[in-house]
Image 1 (cartoon, rainbow, N blue to C red):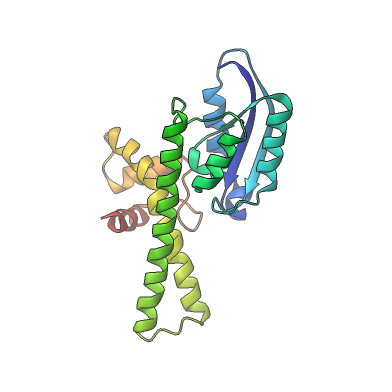
Image 2 (image 1 turned 45 degrees about the vertical axis):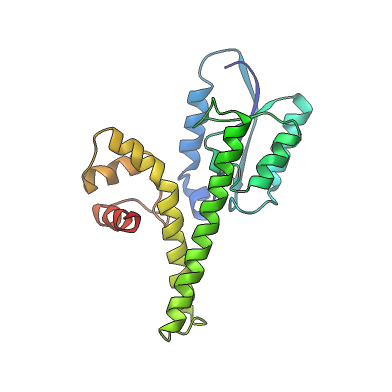
Length: 213
């Protein structure tokens, strides 16, 4: 790689930010992509925020630095930038170049299509969460109780994990790893957190695979 770059990393929870889960993997991905060549990493910005929120000061600071130095914004994965098609389109219209390590050869059309798919996945997760709450209410569950709220939050996190882990599981399967124990070890090596931010075990992998079917 050649040129000037600004790195942007994001995790969704404070727990992941403190533990380094996800962040270290993103840094390693960016470092590996920039390996060799006359490149210069001018800055690194880390955000602890949901991908659906547009108000992200660290990202704005990274973009401002990109404009100042005519640098390219580099991210480990497209979904670390945003799950919002309008946001991606606005970024591209602003004339700021960016590269996602997981798809470095993607053109503008490809990026917009993938952003649209990610946005639709987020909408589908929200719709399924609302449907689960409606079903619980129909069964007589008091949705105002702490337990019901916690259950809904956990359900949403589990669904989000299913969607985010799908491509990783495809990579693991391509390596010939098919047992739940092997998958758990592979996910932990990749620093992929469980919905609660912990480590994977055969039982949690089994639950994940059940949700995906």
